[in-house]
Length: 175
Image 1 (cartoon, rainbow, N blue to C red):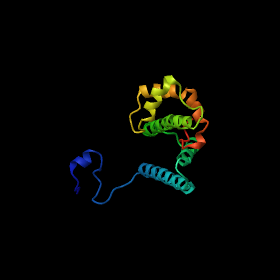
Image 2: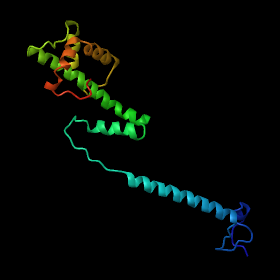
Image 3: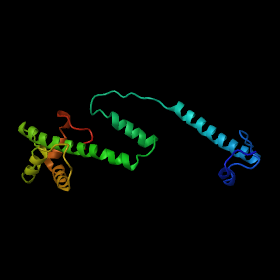
Image 4: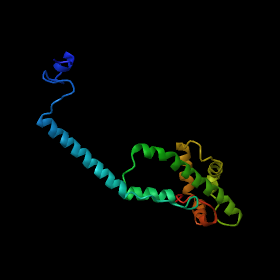
């Protein structure tokens, strides 16, 4: 007799002829199983093929020499695109770089000016220069900071300071 609960039979999971431990296969289920198996094998083979092509690259170099930039450029040219979460994750680093760059220029505009170079900011931008020189690259970047940075960046003294960038350490993305 049949040893399975009625709910399995009524759900169509087992037919009345099924004996304990013996399930019969129809040609249709065998064909579907074979198709699924072939698809899985094909995907696995493709994955193995892709994995064999991967290379590991060790980039050595001093700080600010462009190691990360090189990898990001290679990814943009040959890899997958950056998704929104990766772009949002990069935002604090970009903000920090902008603050660091303009702050360095603000500081060195005065230092180089003390050395006789024509790098001092205009009278109207001195207060902005002083404020920017005191900024921390960890602080929140606001619309007011943006306005200050634009004014300072357009100042002839800052433009002149940029010409001397080889005399001090300036983040390579400052321009």
